[in-house]
Image 1 (cartoon, rainbow, N blue to C red):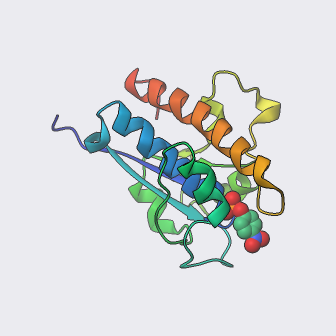
Image 2 (cartoon, helix red, strand yellow; image 1 turned 180 degrees about the vertical axis):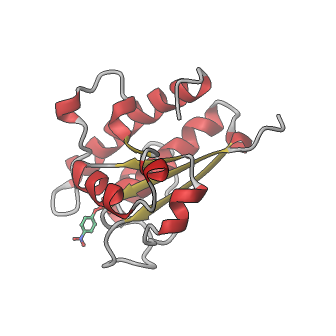
Image 3 (cartoon, rainbow, N blue to C red; image 1 turned 90 degrees about the vertical axis):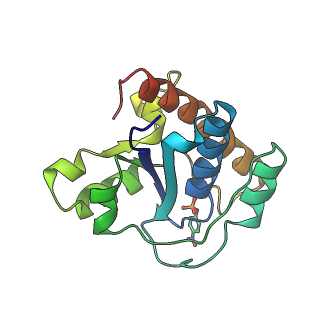
Length: 164
Ligand code: 4NP
């Protein structure tokens, strides 16, 4: 396969819980499908409180229980990301709004989507991946359930040529 990789950036607020989880889940799913070399995956945050931090231990533990590895250090999303990535996938409506506001051009703004748009079981009034940061362990498991369903739908759409 010589076509360029599909470049996906997952974005939440802190880049320590939801977006590193989505990146790790997507990495796991494409590896299972033997498609790792066709994807470039990363995650970033719209907020700056946790820059340089590793993924939250509670996210890492919830993912590890399912055989999913979370890696990386938190970073902020920037203008160059809008040029580089094919799709910029927001975890909730606030991330979506913030991403639309910082997109440098209309064309790059059109790369911003809600991740859960790609979950065939979701509805437009229910696209948020809820922020688990101030809650208990159930919230972190729920994040994995939601992002896994959406990432599987996203991969199907990408392979079918329905996205980006
Ligand atoms: P994330 O979760 O956006 O899923 O990484 C959060 C992490 C940290 C904070 C908020 C949300 N915070 O306020 O520090």
